[in-house]
Image (cartoon, rainbow, N blue to C red; front, side):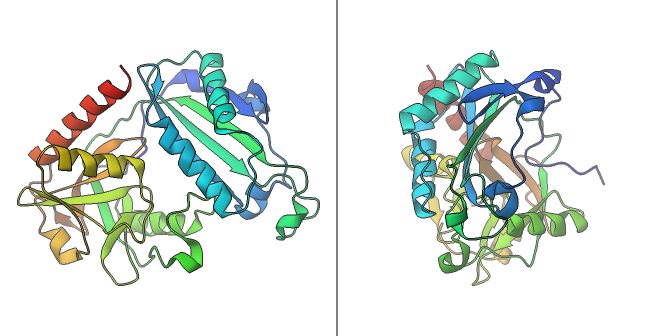
Length: 302
């Protein structure tokens, strides 16, 4: 069995040791990008975040990402203290400080900020939010199709912790990832509360059966921006696509499977619970979708 890999595996890049990070209005060296132990994000996972990808000097779909960030902040009653235009300028300033033009990934994080005492109540966060942008040179490097294992951890109902919320509270997904790794897989395939196939711990999940693309209803997963772009591309290019409930039986018998996410775009899946998907290699429909997505990126970043 080949060694473990992650869906966010990237080529090693020594330049990342020298990156500069945006922190509360200042751009500082990596070693100086420090946050208080009283910070709400560190103490409680109280914050929201977005991932962004730089192609050809342009941050792909940045308006949609920032819309989602501000919507998430509103949902948790967190005032970012900046306009979307100001946040975008901070991204551009960080990019410039790091002299990045393409193949970069940014993680934009906002927490409720430093607390006056180490307890839960949001009223104890009185000093304003902590806002930071980590920007790395980043080129995906997947050696082989991903192996998934189904885990007991689910994405649940929106009244517990809405899976549509990109929050810092990722422990449910981390536990799922650990369970998958213990089972010898790369990432976890998570079901919804009805037992239908839903998402992985870090990416959205698609299967292909008889030329048709299937993904979950979206009711219990992060509605990824890359996920939606794939659905839109299929619809625009006469590839049948369905957002529907489907089971592990449907999944094991699929011809192809792939993951979507801002980092890796479309990543092939070769195995689920020890069942080889198709012939275990990237299939033709996945390849076509990748080509359509690359063409979309070219148009967006021209």
